[in-house]
Length: 189
Image 1 (tube, rainbow, N blue to C red):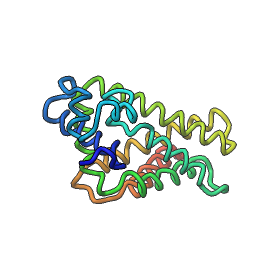
Image 2: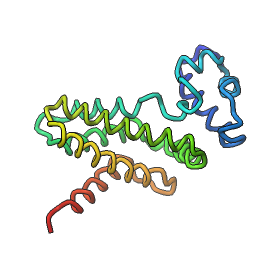
Image 3: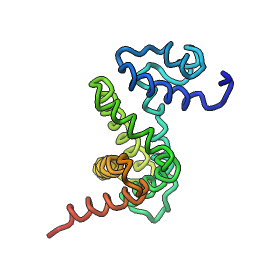
């Protein structure tokens, strides 16, 4: 593959995943990842600050969530704005062609404490991004935080179900189902 191809971050992530699966996270170096992707070490560091970050998309999911919340209709309530963003995420990022890669990625994350810690930090960042996006829509502090935490819970439930490669349901419908379940659980009895 030519070094100038525009899909360098995806190539690096695919190479890293292959190497992490084959040799383990700890035994894989940035140089090996770059070489497997047909790129240089400096190209790796142009996209990722370290080898842990290569499997986390560089903030793509957070950016898409923020865009989705911002693009929700003005009449949408806070949780509906988050649902709108999750639907958009399902259409643009968590697509059927990414499911197998994502499931393999999650298996690697689950096998390495350092990567699970990074994943937890990234999920905290997702919540903070949603809080900021909701605040820009005029949602006050505490309601924005509660909504973002519920949004993260919905995202986690839907993502876990979507990762199951035997599941053919898209991420958006799974997120809507999880949101309905969260709403039902919170409804007065």
